[in-house]
Length: 115
Image (cartoon, rainbow, N blue to C red; front, top):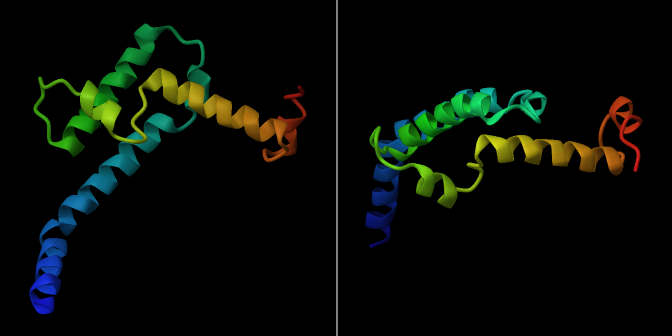
């Protein structure tokens, strides 16, 4: 019995290893590009953020294996770390301000952010 479980686990890991690598690579390349310097998008009109949201939705569809015209909002809502673009920008700014106020950010940023 122990052998069959180990064999099944090993078979599963070998069979789906390429899928896990694919998901990790897509997430790392696309989502990290979206998150890079997105703090400059604070206060930008929603029209411009909609274009980035469409990219994020396409990546989520690719990873979740949803079809092009399926609703992706439930997948984004139920999956951790898949915030909409506007909330991603707000979260990143909030973390930056928190770090500045608690002296966890570089000194050149901490001096600009005083309570």
